[in-house]
Image 1: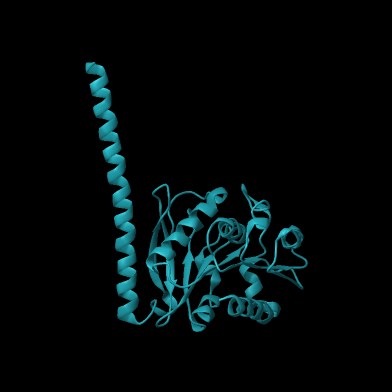
Image 2: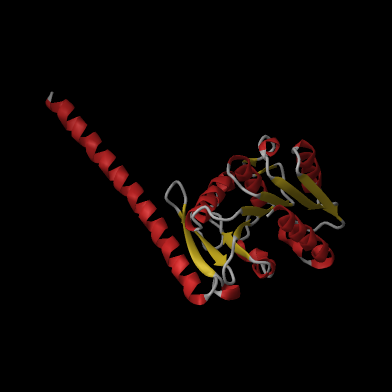
Length: 256
């Protein structure tokens, strides 16, 4: 009986500690959201091209880093997800063009990339992106619509998240069906929202996978295979940049 009582006390103590940790994680997220909102209101936006730092707590407690960009009052949000071994900085001036069109832009660093701590774990990139999605929904009080745009690994993660979360649309740049333990082939047919697949014709399996996922996807859907071999965010530069950007802007305007 005494042993049973001691065991019960230990279990109760552990439960209380777990509950306290969960409350601290929630409190940290709320404080970060409040700081972001105050900063945005006082500056009239998201800190210009340098952006406002954001902190996103993943399900395992790791705090991911990212940037928030906006200009004045915004209605809809876009989350940018970068490629493997890259960072949110890879979006360059493209993010500014989204801000200029009236979107609030949230660019995250996957764990082990950019300013985010931890080791690289591409196989759970969708979990990191899900945490970012829920962060955005929370700080916007579920107002407005959320689009996902991902490059390569980020595109695969975006497709997986779009299959289970309520987004307005998803854009995948050079996204493979499978990459480093992350697989989206089974998720694509479940995405009800609008989808846009873009890849370069000479980008090997990335072009092939884009076509395969487009074929497996349900309407509404679009695909564009452009000339050359540019990959991921490099599609937003060079000779096809204007065309690719126009495709993205038209997609966003049509579906918002």
